[in-house]
Length: 378
Image 1 (cartoon, helix red, strand yellow):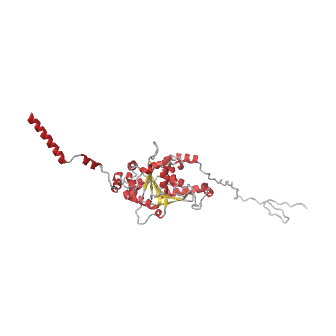
Image 2 (tube, rainbow, N blue to C red):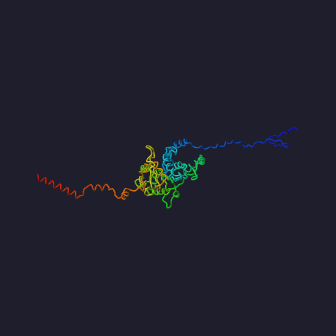
């Protein structure tokens, strides 16, 4: 039986043969774009971090905000180097070794680079950074999330822990917006906690110029209240030259200058020891090495005579324990008043060595009589 022929456009017959249907002129095959490749975010190496920071150094020269907050402060201070190279870190870590575990508060933390370096210490149980600038706190939180994303979460799980502080970096670190020098009836949020260490690094100038003597005094008292008994305050004040430069650059309020401030930076140690209640002070660093930027001294103020960090520091630096000012050191007058035979003062000795006025008058009269007799003989 011959096969049936089906022409184009016809429907297939009952015998099962199919015809070809014409394509619709409106339907055309459109080329499909390939799906985008997923980009994997590789971890930033120290060399890449250094080169990227060096290329962005021109952004670090931007003027600060009204509170003195630089957007790229640590890039400007460290000249593009990694934050782990900051020369202040070894000075602070030697105090952290006295507390196991320890908690710390960074006042004016900027974008949190120094705090995150110190929070990596295996004995750090809680590290809190506060700043008045909302944008800087947002950047600090973003940097903390990036460290968790880049694999430090796995490193934290593998790090050895002790039962006393089971949380390690980066989960032991937090940031929040807070004004520690604000005038308020109740204590700030940070004063509700007790810390072993409180850091105040290159912050006092901006608080002083913005709020005057009253603001810097409130800041000192608040930081004292935040400390546990036996805690330590690490203070890096700016020198008077830095105040005047801020005035010349127009960064300080026009209504307030360095000459209008009664509490000068050189008076900070005396105020903290006598007015706030700190019992001892030690100099962690007199000045930076010669020729280095940010040549500022760093002090440690201890809350309580038996602070563990004070004993540890005096063992490492015995020369400072003899010459450091103490609030409870007796004066020489009080010491001599308790003795049965007080030593005479220099002014008392001078009075005894010179003869009284009546004796001087007699000797002068005798000399005049002798001169008169010589004239009579002649």
